[in-house]
Length: 72
Image (cartoon, rainbow, N blue to C red):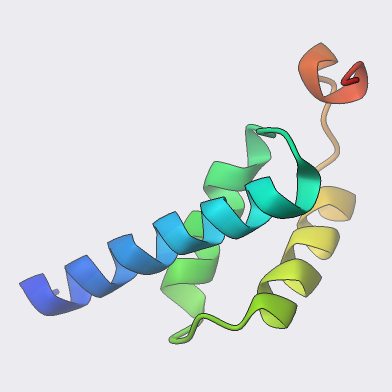
């Protein structure tokens, strides 16, 4: 992977985490994996695609983390 592609993926990953934080209002540890997958699989920054992926991600990867379950 060339450096330009690496930087673009990094930018997309950061953008995705920011968007998920805005959507949820808290940091869910699963956001890191979802954002990384989004950056690798999608060549765009389309919020609706990210939100759809995140909804599916949460359903496919349930969390037993008390910080996620007991949030305010």
